[in-house]
Length: 179
Ligand code: XMP
Ligand code: MG
Image (cartoon, rainbow, N blue to C red; front, side, top):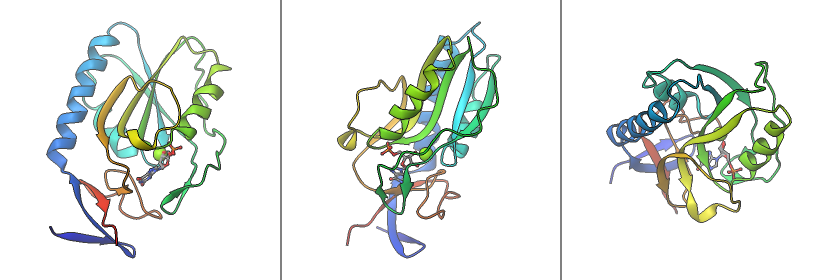
């Protein structure tokens, strides 16, 4: 199989752009159905979710808003368990129906902390739309309400996901070639 190089590592295709689009479409159909008349506020977690969020929001046909927050627990290709704080939340989310938009859930530590942090702002409800999920790496118990694709426990790049900042621009998702 053809491989590509991102920075100094080799990657092979894992999920192509058409499969990505079909998965996003399926999520959007469910959200459009569930949030009719509820004026949801999407909260997309930067940086990784910017591509997925842009695709998802353009398939949402009901009135909605989107805002962006930042938090990160990752450097290089190994989860550091160094949980960072939530920054950039400048909307009033009290009483709002939130849909958290995330590119990937790996161990789940990042989102678990984030979901706890959100409670003090008293949203009306919080649901999770996550594009990829590394089920085998997951250590927490929160529910992913809208899930794109479950993936094996390999490091992936593309579609907003990065290796040291590179590869976010790739339209497909690639997994690392283990050496
Ligand atoms: P946890 O382990 O807290 O990790 O669920 C979530 C965050 O870690 C990043 N992450 C990845 N980024 N390829 C990436 O480009 C991966 O395979 C990967 N696994 C985890 C990501 O930022 C996510 O928000
Ligand atoms: Mg992320």
